[in-house]
Structures are given as structure tokens and as C-alpha cells.
Image (cartoon, helix red, strand yellow):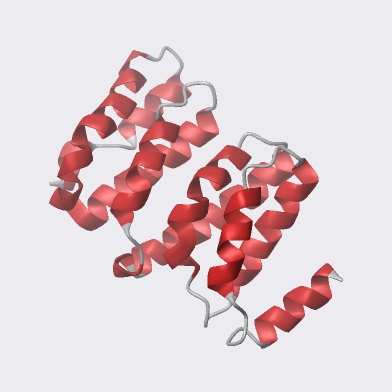
Length: 173
């Protein structure tokens, strides 16, 4: 049934009411159930793959939930990481298609997550790309960005110290 619904949506994307679907997705994206998370990621991936549907427009509504899903089991992490990489690739290709400032505070919050290295790494990587794409437009967020990345200097493990290295702030200007 799920596959049939996905086929119907992808073949008839022009009649699919995405603005009505997004609030339902946003409401359920914070679920802790791994099966529900897998289901949601698969739907977001399918919708993102349809050329007529601009999921970047709705990314600020679901980004926090996607980053929370990176704390799940390995399979969910992998699926979510792949989806986030696709979104970031699309943002790099067309930065005007999304409001980067709406997502920056979400990323800053996740970049401060010292308990989960994957989440912190992904958030800092996204922030670096946002700065690269929009430069001085991100100036109102500099304090939050610095408060997220400066603690990386104090980490003892090399893997966590590398978070700072991927974020060569001064190179961006």
C-alpha cells in the first residue's frame, strides 16, 4: 500500500496537496518510534526526488526532526544522513530556493550537541556551507555559531577536534 501510494503521488505530483501534507509531516517527525521514523524518511526522500516538488521550501519545518533522527539506530542514521546530504546538495545547487536564516538557529542548537558526534558534525558542516553560500547575511548568527564551534577546541579526542578544523571560519571571508 505504501509503495502504491508513493507511485500515485510521484506520477501525479501536480494534484498532490503538499502544503496540506507538510503540517502532518511536521507533527509526526518528532516521533521516537524507529519504524515510524523509517517510514517518514522514505516519504521525504520520495517527495524530494520528484522534480515538480520543491521540498527545500518546506525543509525549515522538518529539519529539526531530521537531525533528531540521527540519534536512532544505524539504519535510520544512514537513511537520514543520506537524505540530509541530498538536501544540502540541492541547497548548494540553488541557495535561493531556501531561507537559510530560518534553519540557522536549528543548526546552531544541534551543533552544540556534545553528546552525539554525528549530529554535531552534520550541523557544523551545514553551518559552514551556509556561511559559504551567504557570507555576511549570516552576521546576526555569528555569536551563536561561535558558541557552537569554540567548545570543539577543548575536546581531547582527535575526532572531535576535527569539528573545528572543518569550520575554518576565516577562510570563508
